[in-house]
Image 1 (tube, rainbow, N blue to C red):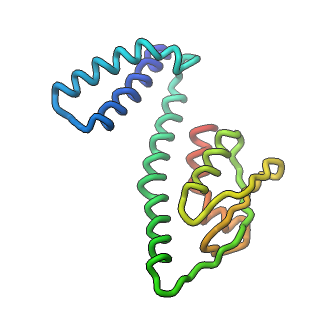
Image 2 (cartoon, rainbow, N blue to C red; image 1 turned 120 degrees about the vertical axis):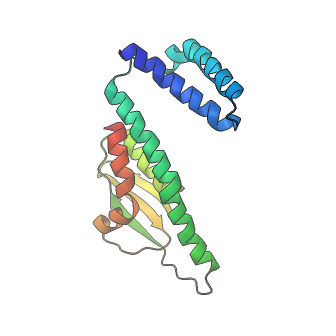
Length: 168
């Protein structure tokens, strides 16, 4: 069962990339893409997956996909709209500050995902990570609070929620 899951995961990712990047959904293209994806899966599965996957790995991969959709469709769009309002406003209303934000993810991968998400979101950038005390120091273009817990709520809580589910 776990061996089949590994093949299914590689095939699904390969086929999904093919559909997205080919830009066509004709029957011929879909059949050709599935055949190509099967061939790629058989050839590279052992290079991409070092152990057989379990159902929990599939669940984590699902959370990763959901996170990507949330990040690109919600968090990024909101942040770009907020920055556009600031830029297009006649009165520049910013209050830049460096705020200290605690993080609670346990793995380095999780911490990196959260820090990268904060940095890639317009209006915020992680300028330092204190891994010993588990704090991010974030430059926030429109600082609403200097209280670490409240700043975390505004900036990184949603990112951490997904990171915990992806990386445990």
